[in-house]
Amino acid sequence: MKTSVLFGVILMFLCIFINGSLSKLQRLEHPVTKSDGSLSFLVVGDWGRKGEFNQSLVAHQMGIVGEQLEIDFVVSVGDNFYDDGLIGENDPSFEASFSHIYTQSSLQKQWYSVLGNHDYRGNVSAQLSQVLTQKDWRWFCRRSFVLSSGSGMVEIFFVDTNPFVEKYFTDPGDHTYDWSNVLPRKKYISNLLHDLDLELKKSHATWKFVVGHHGIKTAGDHGVTQELVDQLVPIMEENKVDLYINGHDHCLQHIGSDGEIQFLTSGGGSKAWRGGIMPWDPKELKLYYDGQGDNFYDDGLNGENDPSFEASFSHIYTQHSLQKQWYSILGNHDYMGNVSAQLSQVLTQKDWRWFCRRSFILSSGMVEFFFVDTNPFVEQYFTDPGDHTYDWSNVLPRKKYISNLLHDLDLEIKKSRATWKFVVGHHGIKTAGQHGVTQELVDLLLPILEENKVDLYINGHDHCLQHIGSDG
Image (tube, rainbow, N blue to C red; front, side, top):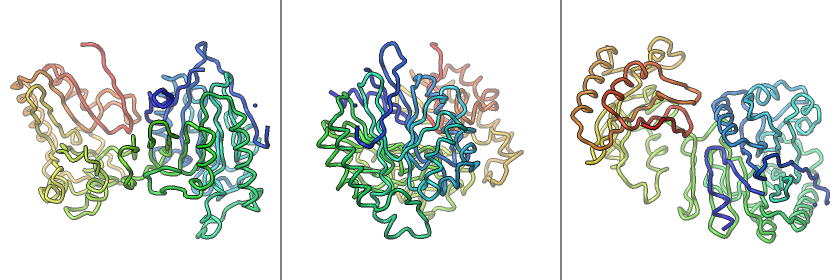
Protein backbone atom coordinates (compact mmCIF):
# COMPACT_ATOMS: atom_id res chain seq x y z
CA MET A 1 0.00 0.00 0.00
CA LYS A 2 2.80 2.41 0.90
CA THR A 3 4.52 1.77 -2.42
CA SER A 4 1.39 2.36 -4.48
CA VAL A 5 0.74 5.67 -2.70
CA LEU A 6 4.33 6.80 -2.97
CA PHE A 7 4.66 6.25 -6.70
CA GLY A 8 1.29 7.54 -7.80
CA VAL A 9 3.08 10.39 -9.52
CA ILE A 10 6.67 10.29 -10.70
CA LEU A 11 7.35 12.79 -13.50
CA MET A 12 10.37 14.83 -14.71
CA PHE A 13 12.28 15.80 -11.57
CA LEU A 14 10.75 13.08 -9.35
CA CYS A 15 8.04 15.24 -7.83
CA ILE A 16 6.87 13.62 -4.59
CA PHE A 17 3.63 14.25 -2.66
CA ILE A 18 3.00 13.23 0.92
CA ASN A 19 -0.29 13.85 2.87
CA GLY A 20 0.27 14.29 6.61
CA SER A 21 13.12 13.71 17.56
CA LEU A 22 19.39 13.68 18.97
CA SER A 23 22.55 12.32 17.90
CA LYS A 24 25.20 14.45 16.24
CA LEU A 25 23.09 14.85 13.10
CA GLN A 26 21.56 18.29 12.85
CA ARG A 27 17.77 18.18 12.84
CA LEU A 28 15.58 20.66 10.95
CA GLU A 29 11.83 21.01 10.76
CA HIS A 30 10.03 22.30 7.69
CA PRO A 31 6.57 23.64 8.56
CA VAL A 32 3.49 22.38 6.77
CA THR A 33 1.68 25.36 5.25
CA LYS A 34 -1.13 23.70 3.27
CA SER A 35 -4.51 23.35 4.92
CA ASP A 36 -4.78 19.68 3.96
CA GLY A 37 -1.44 18.89 5.58
CA SER A 38 0.14 17.72 2.31
CA LEU A 39 3.77 18.24 1.36
CA SER A 40 5.32 18.42 -2.11
CA PHE A 41 8.87 18.99 -3.26
CA LEU A 42 11.19 18.71 -6.25
CA VAL A 43 14.41 16.72 -6.39
CA VAL A 44 17.26 17.77 -8.69
CA GLY A 45 20.89 16.77 -8.94
CA ASP A 46 24.05 17.27 -10.98
CA TRP A 47 23.11 20.76 -12.10
CA GLY A 48 25.58 23.61 -11.51
CA ARG A 49 26.89 24.59 -14.97
CA LYS A 50 26.17 28.33 -15.11
CA GLY A 51 23.04 27.68 -17.11
CA GLU A 52 24.77 25.68 -19.83
CA PHE A 53 24.20 22.08 -20.93
CA ASN A 54 20.42 22.54 -20.60
CA GLN A 55 20.59 23.67 -16.97
CA SER A 56 18.51 26.76 -17.79
CA LEU A 57 16.02 24.62 -19.71
CA VAL A 58 15.60 22.26 -16.78
CA ALA A 59 15.29 25.20 -14.38
CA HIS A 60 12.52 26.65 -16.55
CA GLN A 61 10.56 23.41 -16.44
CA MET A 62 11.15 23.13 -12.70
CA GLY A 63 9.56 26.52 -12.32
CA ILE A 64 6.48 25.46 -14.26
CA VAL A 65 6.07 22.20 -12.35
CA GLY A 66 6.86 23.90 -9.06
CA GLU A 67 4.01 26.33 -9.60
CA GLN A 68 1.57 23.60 -10.60
CA LEU A 69 2.38 21.54 -7.52
CA GLU A 70 2.77 24.45 -5.13
CA ILE A 71 6.01 22.94 -3.84
CA ASP A 72 7.20 23.46 -0.30
CA PHE A 73 10.94 23.07 -0.94
CA VAL A 74 13.61 21.68 -3.26
CA VAL A 75 16.06 18.86 -2.51
CA SER A 76 19.47 18.87 -4.24
CA VAL A 77 21.24 15.52 -4.30
CA GLY A 78 24.70 16.94 -4.98
CA ASP A 79 27.17 17.90 -7.69
CA ASN A 80 25.92 21.40 -7.10
CA PHE A 81 28.81 23.20 -8.84
CA TYR A 82 30.82 21.86 -11.79
CA ASP A 83 33.47 20.87 -12.49
CA ASP A 84 35.34 21.32 -9.22
CA GLY A 85 32.94 22.73 -6.64
CA LEU A 86 33.46 26.28 -5.35
CA ILE A 87 36.88 27.83 -4.81
CA GLY A 88 35.61 29.86 -1.86
CA GLU A 89 32.68 31.74 -0.35
CA ASN A 90 32.99 34.52 -2.93
CA ASP A 91 33.21 32.25 -5.97
CA PRO A 92 30.93 33.87 -8.61
CA SER A 93 29.87 30.37 -9.66
CA PHE A 94 27.43 30.36 -6.77
CA GLU A 95 25.30 33.11 -8.25
CA ALA A 96 26.01 32.08 -11.85
CA SER A 97 24.89 28.48 -11.29
CA PHE A 98 22.26 28.94 -8.58
CA SER A 99 20.85 32.39 -7.81
CA HIS A 100 20.76 33.60 -11.43
CA ILE A 101 19.33 30.34 -12.79
CA TYR A 102 16.51 29.28 -10.49
CA THR A 103 14.67 32.58 -10.68
CA GLN A 104 11.06 31.47 -11.16
CA SER A 105 8.75 32.47 -8.32
CA SER A 106 7.81 28.88 -7.50
CA LEU A 107 11.49 28.06 -6.84
CA GLN A 108 11.88 30.80 -4.24
CA LYS A 109 11.66 28.16 -1.55
CA GLN A 110 14.14 26.57 0.82
CA TRP A 111 16.71 24.34 -0.90
CA TYR A 112 18.09 21.44 1.15
CA SER A 113 21.36 20.20 -0.34
CA VAL A 114 24.02 17.55 0.13
CA LEU A 115 27.43 17.33 -1.50
CA GLY A 116 28.44 15.35 -4.59
CA ASN A 117 31.86 14.12 -5.64
CA HIS A 118 32.41 17.19 -7.83
CA ASP A 119 31.67 19.42 -4.83
CA TYR A 120 34.39 17.65 -2.86
CA ARG A 121 36.91 18.67 -5.55
CA GLY A 122 36.51 22.26 -4.43
CA ASN A 123 36.39 24.07 -1.13
CA VAL A 124 33.80 22.10 0.83
CA SER A 125 33.60 24.57 3.72
CA ALA A 126 32.54 27.26 1.25
CA GLN A 127 29.38 25.34 0.29
CA LEU A 128 28.61 24.71 3.95
CA SER A 129 29.15 28.37 4.90
CA GLN A 130 26.50 30.74 6.21
CA VAL A 131 28.00 33.35 3.89
CA LEU A 132 26.22 31.68 0.96
CA THR A 133 22.94 31.77 2.87
CA GLN A 134 23.45 35.51 3.35
CA LYS A 135 23.91 35.84 -0.43
CA ASP A 136 20.80 33.74 -1.13
CA TRP A 137 18.49 32.84 1.74
CA ARG A 138 17.30 29.68 -0.01
CA TRP A 139 20.65 27.92 0.30
CA PHE A 140 21.14 25.29 3.00
CA CYS A 141 23.87 22.66 2.57
CA ARG A 142 25.32 20.23 5.09
CA ARG A 143 27.21 16.96 4.85
CA SER A 144 24.48 15.01 6.68
CA PHE A 145 21.31 16.07 8.51
CA VAL A 146 17.68 15.18 9.19
CA LEU A 147 14.67 17.06 7.84
CA SER A 148 11.24 16.53 9.37
CA SER A 149 7.95 17.82 8.03
CA GLY A 150 5.89 19.84 10.47
CA SER A 151 3.37 17.04 10.80
CA GLY A 152 6.00 14.39 11.41
CA MET A 153 4.49 12.32 8.62
CA VAL A 154 7.77 12.24 6.69
CA GLU A 155 11.42 12.45 7.68
CA ILE A 156 14.26 12.80 5.18
CA PHE A 157 17.72 11.64 6.23
CA PHE A 158 20.45 13.35 4.19
CA VAL A 159 23.66 11.30 4.09
CA ASP A 160 27.15 12.27 2.87
CA THR A 161 27.94 9.28 0.64
CA ASN A 162 31.21 10.59 -0.80
CA PRO A 163 33.61 9.25 1.87
CA PHE A 164 32.21 5.74 1.36
CA VAL A 165 33.67 5.53 -2.16
CA GLU A 166 37.06 3.83 -1.88
CA LYS A 167 38.43 4.91 -5.26
CA TYR A 168 38.24 8.60 -4.35
CA PHE A 169 41.00 7.86 -1.83
CA THR A 170 42.99 5.09 -3.55
CA ASP A 171 42.74 6.17 -7.19
CA PRO A 172 41.70 9.84 -7.44
CA GLY A 173 43.34 10.29 -10.83
CA ASP A 174 43.94 13.95 -11.65
CA HIS A 175 41.42 15.10 -9.05
CA THR A 176 42.16 16.59 -5.65
CA TYR A 177 39.51 16.09 -2.99
CA ASP A 178 38.97 18.26 0.07
CA TRP A 179 38.79 15.69 2.88
CA SER A 180 39.14 18.17 5.73
CA ASN A 181 36.93 17.16 8.65
CA VAL A 182 36.46 13.73 7.09
CA LEU A 183 39.75 12.02 7.96
CA PRO A 184 40.29 9.55 9.47
CA ARG A 185 37.84 8.11 6.97
CA LYS A 186 36.86 4.91 8.77
CA LYS A 187 35.95 6.78 11.94
CA TYR A 188 33.93 9.33 9.96
CA ILE A 189 31.92 6.58 8.23
CA SER A 190 31.48 4.62 11.46
CA ASN A 191 30.16 7.67 13.33
CA LEU A 192 27.86 8.62 10.45
CA LEU A 193 26.33 5.15 10.21
CA HIS A 194 25.90 5.01 13.98
CA ASP A 195 24.12 8.38 14.07
CA LEU A 196 21.96 7.53 11.07
CA ASP A 197 20.90 4.21 12.59
CA LEU A 198 20.07 5.96 15.86
CA GLU A 199 18.00 8.63 14.14
CA LEU A 200 16.09 6.12 12.04
CA LYS A 201 15.28 4.04 15.10
CA LYS A 202 14.00 7.13 16.92
CA SER A 203 11.82 8.17 14.01
CA HIS A 204 8.06 7.72 14.25
CA ALA A 205 7.45 9.16 10.78
CA THR A 206 5.08 7.31 8.48
CA TRP A 207 7.52 7.75 5.63
CA LYS A 208 11.31 7.53 5.91
CA PHE A 209 13.40 8.74 2.97
CA VAL A 210 17.19 8.65 2.71
CA VAL A 211 18.96 11.07 0.36
CA GLY A 212 22.54 10.66 -0.87
CA HIS A 213 24.54 11.55 -3.94
CA HIS A 214 25.66 8.10 -5.08
CA GLY A 215 23.47 5.37 -6.53
CA ILE A 216 22.71 2.07 -4.82
CA LYS A 217 20.49 0.50 -7.45
CA THR A 218 21.10 2.18 -10.79
CA ALA A 219 21.29 1.22 -14.46
CA GLY A 220 23.30 4.37 -15.19
CA ASP A 221 26.91 4.63 -16.30
CA HIS A 222 28.36 5.01 -12.80
CA GLY A 223 26.68 1.81 -11.72
CA VAL A 224 26.07 0.40 -8.26
CA THR A 225 28.11 1.88 -5.39
CA GLN A 226 29.13 -1.36 -3.71
CA GLU A 227 30.33 0.35 -0.55
CA LEU A 228 26.79 1.66 0.02
CA VAL A 229 25.30 -1.75 -0.70
CA ASP A 230 27.56 -3.26 1.94
CA GLN A 231 27.30 -0.59 4.63
CA LEU A 232 24.24 1.62 4.13
CA VAL A 233 21.61 -0.74 2.72
CA PRO A 234 21.54 -3.06 5.79
CA ILE A 235 20.72 -0.08 8.02
CA MET A 236 18.00 1.12 5.67
CA GLU A 237 16.47 -2.34 5.41
CA GLU A 238 16.57 -2.91 9.16
CA ASN A 239 14.83 0.41 9.78
CA LYS A 240 12.26 -0.07 7.02
CA VAL A 241 13.25 2.95 4.94
CA ASP A 242 10.75 3.50 2.14
CA LEU A 243 12.81 5.37 -0.42
CA TYR A 244 16.42 6.13 -1.33
CA ILE A 245 16.97 9.17 -3.59
CA ASN A 246 20.28 9.94 -5.34
CA GLY A 247 21.91 11.73 -8.25
CA HIS A 248 25.37 10.98 -9.72
CA ASP A 249 24.02 9.23 -12.83
CA HIS A 250 22.79 11.96 -15.17
CA CYS A 251 19.32 10.60 -15.79
CA LEU A 252 15.95 9.95 -14.20
CA GLN A 253 15.16 6.44 -13.06
CA HIS A 254 13.06 4.36 -10.68
CA ILE A 255 14.12 0.87 -9.61
CA GLY A 256 12.27 -1.21 -7.08
CA SER A 257 10.01 -4.12 -6.21
CA ASP A 258 6.80 -4.08 -4.21
CA GLY A 259 7.38 -4.25 -0.48
CA GLU A 260 11.03 -3.25 -0.73
CA ILE A 261 13.01 0.00 -0.68
CA GLN A 262 12.39 2.04 -3.81
CA PHE A 263 15.39 3.69 -5.51
CA LEU A 264 14.99 6.96 -7.41
CA THR A 265 17.69 8.76 -9.37
CA SER A 266 17.30 12.44 -10.23
CA GLY A 267 20.60 13.46 -11.80
CA GLY A 268 19.26 15.25 -14.86
CA GLY A 269 19.73 18.82 -13.64
CA SER A 270 21.88 19.79 -16.61
CA LYS A 271 24.14 17.63 -18.77
CA ALA A 272 22.46 14.29 -19.51
CA TRP A 273 24.29 11.25 -20.85
CA ARG A 274 22.86 9.97 -24.10
CA GLY A 275 22.39 6.22 -24.07
CA GLY A 276 24.12 5.78 -20.71
CA ILE A 277 22.17 2.73 -19.57
CA MET A 278 23.32 -0.70 -18.49
CA PRO A 279 21.23 -3.89 -18.39
CA TRP A 280 18.84 -4.20 -15.46
CA ASP A 281 16.00 -6.54 -14.57
CA PRO A 282 12.96 -5.07 -16.40
CA LYS A 283 10.73 -6.19 -13.54
CA GLU A 284 12.60 -3.75 -11.29
CA LEU A 285 13.44 -0.97 -13.74
CA LYS A 286 10.22 1.04 -13.74
CA LEU A 287 11.58 4.18 -15.41
CA TYR A 288 14.76 5.25 -17.21
CA TYR A 289 15.00 8.57 -19.02
CA ASP A 290 18.21 10.14 -20.29
CA GLY A 291 16.70 13.50 -21.24
CA GLN A 292 17.25 13.28 -24.98
CA GLY A 293 14.77 14.36 -27.65
CA ASP A 294 16.20 14.16 -31.20
CA ASN A 295 17.25 10.75 -32.54
CA PHE A 296 21.06 11.18 -32.34
CA TYR A 297 22.90 13.92 -30.45
CA ASP A 298 24.67 16.25 -30.85
CA ASP A 299 25.08 16.24 -34.61
CA GLY A 300 23.09 13.32 -36.02
CA LEU A 301 24.95 10.44 -37.65
CA ASN A 302 28.12 10.89 -39.66
CA GLY A 303 27.26 8.00 -41.97
CA GLU A 304 25.55 4.62 -42.27
CA ASN A 305 28.31 2.95 -40.25
CA ASP A 306 28.36 5.49 -37.42
CA PRO A 307 28.55 3.40 -34.21
CA SER A 308 26.19 5.89 -32.57
CA PHE A 309 23.29 4.08 -34.22
CA GLU A 310 23.82 0.91 -32.22
CA ALA A 311 25.13 2.76 -29.15
CA SER A 312 22.09 5.06 -28.94
CA PHE A 313 19.37 2.81 -30.33
CA SER A 314 19.97 -0.92 -30.69
CA HIS A 315 21.96 -1.34 -27.47
CA ILE A 316 19.63 0.85 -25.40
CA TYR A 317 16.06 -0.13 -26.23
CA THR A 318 16.61 -3.80 -25.47
CA GLN A 319 13.54 -4.63 -23.40
CA HIS A 320 11.29 -7.29 -24.85
CA SER A 321 8.30 -4.96 -25.12
CA LEU A 322 10.31 -2.55 -27.31
CA GLN A 323 11.08 -5.12 -30.01
CA LYS A 324 8.46 -3.50 -32.22
CA GLN A 325 8.50 -1.30 -35.30
CA TRP A 326 9.80 2.22 -34.64
CA TYR A 327 8.47 5.02 -36.89
CA SER A 328 10.80 8.02 -36.81
CA ILE A 329 11.18 11.49 -38.26
CA LEU A 330 14.10 13.89 -38.06
CA GLY A 331 14.86 16.58 -35.51
CA ASN A 332 17.07 19.64 -35.89
CA HIS A 333 20.07 17.83 -34.36
CA ASP A 334 19.62 15.04 -36.91
CA TYR A 335 19.86 17.62 -39.68
CA MET A 336 23.26 18.63 -38.27
CA GLY A 337 24.61 15.27 -39.44
CA ASN A 338 24.29 13.09 -42.52
CA VAL A 339 20.54 12.95 -43.12
CA SER A 340 20.68 10.30 -45.83
CA ALA A 341 22.34 7.94 -43.33
CA GLN A 342 19.31 8.01 -41.02
CA LEU A 343 17.00 7.45 -43.99
CA SER A 344 19.08 4.57 -45.35
CA GLN A 345 17.94 0.95 -45.60
CA VAL A 346 21.37 0.01 -44.29
CA LEU A 347 20.23 0.96 -40.78
CA THR A 348 17.13 -1.20 -41.18
CA GLN A 349 19.42 -4.10 -42.08
CA LYS A 350 21.37 -3.46 -38.88
CA ASP A 351 18.17 -3.28 -36.79
CA TRP A 352 14.88 -4.31 -38.37
CA ARG A 353 12.89 -1.98 -36.08
CA TRP A 354 14.28 1.19 -37.63
CA PHE A 355 12.15 3.16 -40.09
CA CYS A 356 12.87 6.84 -40.67
CA ARG A 357 11.63 9.18 -43.41
CA ARG A 358 11.27 12.94 -43.74
CA SER A 359 7.48 12.78 -44.11
CA PHE A 360 5.07 9.86 -44.49
CA ILE A 361 1.66 8.48 -43.49
CA LEU A 362 0.96 5.56 -41.19
CA SER A 363 -2.53 4.08 -41.30
CA SER A 364 -4.00 1.68 -38.79
CA GLY A 365 -7.63 1.70 -39.82
CA MET A 366 -9.31 3.83 -37.19
CA VAL A 367 -6.35 6.19 -36.88
CA GLU A 368 -3.94 7.76 -39.37
CA PHE A 369 -0.64 9.40 -38.43
CA PHE A 370 0.74 12.10 -40.71
CA PHE A 371 4.48 12.48 -40.06
CA VAL A 372 5.77 15.89 -41.14
CA ASP A 373 9.33 17.16 -41.54
CA THR A 374 9.10 20.46 -39.64
CA ASN A 375 12.81 21.37 -39.75
CA PRO A 376 12.83 23.29 -43.07
CA PHE A 377 10.03 25.54 -41.78
CA VAL A 378 12.33 27.12 -39.18
CA GLU A 379 13.79 30.30 -40.69
CA GLN A 380 16.55 30.59 -38.10
CA TYR A 381 18.25 27.39 -39.26
CA PHE A 382 18.88 29.07 -42.62
CA THR A 383 19.46 32.71 -41.69
CA ASP A 384 21.29 32.33 -38.36
CA PRO A 385 22.65 28.78 -37.96
CA GLY A 386 25.39 29.86 -35.57
CA ASP A 387 28.18 27.29 -35.34
CA HIS A 388 25.98 24.53 -36.78
CA THR A 389 26.10 23.11 -40.28
CA TYR A 390 22.85 21.63 -41.58
CA ASP A 391 22.49 19.01 -44.28
CA TRP A 392 19.86 20.54 -46.56
CA SER A 393 20.43 18.19 -49.49
CA ASN A 394 17.11 17.31 -51.16
CA VAL A 395 15.44 20.18 -49.29
CA LEU A 396 16.58 23.18 -51.34
CA PRO A 397 15.06 25.29 -52.75
CA ARG A 398 13.38 25.59 -49.37
CA LYS A 399 10.19 27.43 -50.35
CA LYS A 400 9.37 24.86 -53.01
CA TYR A 401 10.05 22.00 -50.56
CA ILE A 402 7.68 23.50 -47.96
CA SER A 403 5.02 24.34 -50.56
CA ASN A 404 5.03 20.78 -51.95
CA LEU A 405 4.97 19.27 -48.46
CA LEU A 406 1.99 21.37 -47.34
CA HIS A 407 0.11 20.65 -50.57
CA ASP A 408 0.64 16.90 -50.23
CA LEU A 409 -0.24 16.91 -46.53
CA ASP A 410 -3.47 18.83 -47.13
CA LEU A 411 -4.43 16.47 -49.95
CA GLU A 412 -3.79 13.35 -47.86
CA ILE A 413 -5.67 14.61 -44.81
CA LYS A 414 -8.66 15.52 -46.98
CA LYS A 415 -8.66 11.98 -48.43
CA SER A 416 -8.52 10.40 -45.00
CA ARG A 417 -11.57 8.57 -43.66
CA ALA A 418 -9.92 7.76 -40.33
CA THR A 419 -11.85 8.43 -37.12
CA TRP A 420 -8.73 9.94 -35.58
CA LYS A 421 -6.17 12.07 -37.40
CA PHE A 422 -2.82 12.69 -35.70
CA VAL A 423 0.03 14.83 -37.04
CA VAL A 424 3.58 14.23 -35.82
CA GLY A 425 6.45 16.72 -36.13
CA HIS A 426 9.60 17.59 -34.24
CA HIS A 427 8.93 21.25 -33.42
CA GLY A 428 6.29 22.63 -31.07
CA ILE A 429 3.23 24.61 -32.09
CA LYS A 430 1.74 25.20 -28.66
CA THR A 431 4.36 24.74 -25.96
CA ALA A 432 5.33 26.24 -22.62
CA GLY A 433 8.87 24.87 -23.05
CA GLN A 434 12.07 26.81 -23.45
CA HIS A 435 12.14 26.63 -27.26
CA GLY A 436 8.73 28.20 -27.37
CA VAL A 437 6.18 28.41 -30.16
CA THR A 438 7.42 27.76 -33.71
CA GLN A 439 5.75 30.70 -35.42
CA GLU A 440 6.37 29.35 -38.92
CA LEU A 441 4.26 26.29 -38.05
CA VAL A 442 1.54 28.46 -36.52
CA ASP A 443 1.38 30.45 -39.78
CA LEU A 444 1.75 27.63 -42.32
CA LEU A 445 0.87 24.26 -40.78
CA LEU A 446 -1.75 25.04 -38.15
CA PRO A 447 -4.38 26.37 -40.62
CA ILE A 448 -4.23 23.05 -42.51
CA LEU A 449 -4.58 21.09 -39.27
CA GLU A 450 -7.58 23.17 -38.20
CA GLU A 451 -9.29 23.10 -41.60
CA ASN A 452 -9.02 19.32 -41.77
CA LYS A 453 -10.12 18.78 -38.17
CA VAL A 454 -6.91 17.11 -37.00
CA ASP A 455 -7.37 15.75 -33.48
CA LEU A 456 -3.83 15.77 -32.13
CA TYR A 457 -0.42 17.26 -32.86
CA ILE A 458 2.56 15.48 -31.27
CA ASN A 459 6.08 16.95 -31.11
CA GLY A 460 9.42 16.83 -29.32
CA HIS A 461 12.12 19.56 -29.34
CA ASP A 462 11.34 20.85 -25.83
CA HIS A 463 12.89 18.35 -23.43
CA CYS A 464 9.78 17.81 -21.33
CA LEU A 465 6.34 16.24 -21.25
CA GLN A 466 3.32 18.50 -21.70
CA HIS A 467 -0.29 18.58 -22.86
CA ILE A 468 -1.93 21.79 -24.05
CA GLY A 469 -5.46 22.04 -25.39
CA SER A 470 -9.07 23.09 -24.97
CA ASP A 471 -12.20 20.98 -25.38
CA GLY A 472 -13.22 20.66 -29.00
